[in-house]
Image (tube, rainbow, N blue to C red):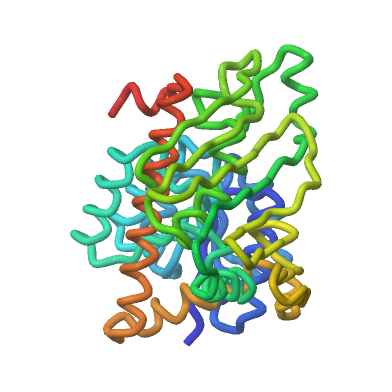
Length: 335
């Protein structure tokens, strides 16, 4: 039987996830929570949804729903996930899953107590090309470092320039460049290289107090990873991982379409990337369903444990980077 899916958040990323979930054939769309019933119906009815709610407590108790996908503003993730898990729902939360380690630890504890699964929707770690890079790194002798760039101008920055404070640029809603886009290369670095010895963040703060753009340095024993991220400018730089002889050059760290392997000694240049799936969220939806449908399978439980540990590490490093730059979310004051 298909997993019965409910969602919180009715933006473009939710559309993409629901499309991906349905494409796998392992989910059916059932419910939508929104600020108005009209908005919930407008989103859900085209997918065949039948449950529309504006009361979170009532929504959480619906027996027709097995798993919830949460894509609300970052600062709302924790309270919503806690409510859903206490009601016995499995929860998939868009990255960044929670604002700080205090929230992360509390939520994982509640998931265990209620025997439900809690996933962070870091879609790129489930993509085939992401894992091709991960495997190819093992063949790089004397790793010397990496540069990752994810910088994309946000249309909502014009609101900031006009004196407003949209959610994604708000300390109240746990926003900013690092939280919104930097989470992708941080996930890549920790997945590919492990936890750094130390981390530093040099950012440009904007009028709302969050980081508009910045450069993070992750220090490892023998190399550094430099991460450029931002939401107030565009960058078209490739991302690279380099050793003494071999270099991997990618068109990004998420949704990777090209992986050029360059060997200095042999002058070899080869694109080792595979053809990508049209919807970049299909692979993660498939991966989550395999765990949910096989909750006692050793392989699936191992995958889940590894994803959860990586999520914990990323949350810790993101928090360390923010603290290094003096960025304090409202959620941090409650911790």
